Image 1 (cartoon, rainbow, N blue to C red):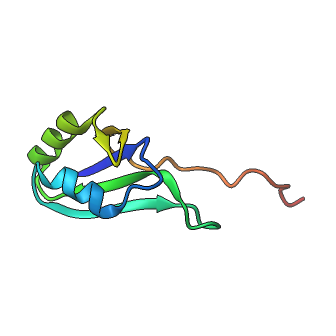
Image 2 (image 1 turned 45 degrees about the vertical axis):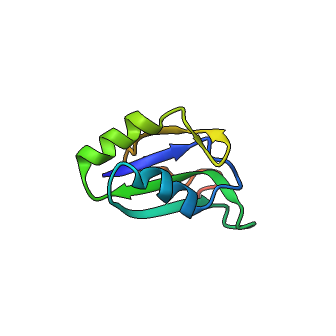
Image 3 (image 1 turned 90 degrees about the horizontal axis):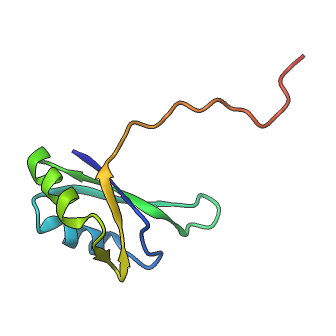
Length: 92
């Protein structure tokens, strides 16, 4: 199960997140999303949990709870929306 973690402290580490989610079940991966130019956290992450039931428990147990000193928003990740290129001039 893929889980979105928002409102994440910029100081939070993947280890902080893995420890919090690990209390609910086996964590397959943690990925803090970083700005491509600065390398700084963008304030959200994705957690992949091996078991869907444990993932639902983690969502219920960690939503609005603190990780690295900040209350986080936790919910099931939605598929990324298809974005059109936009922003520039099209070819004539």
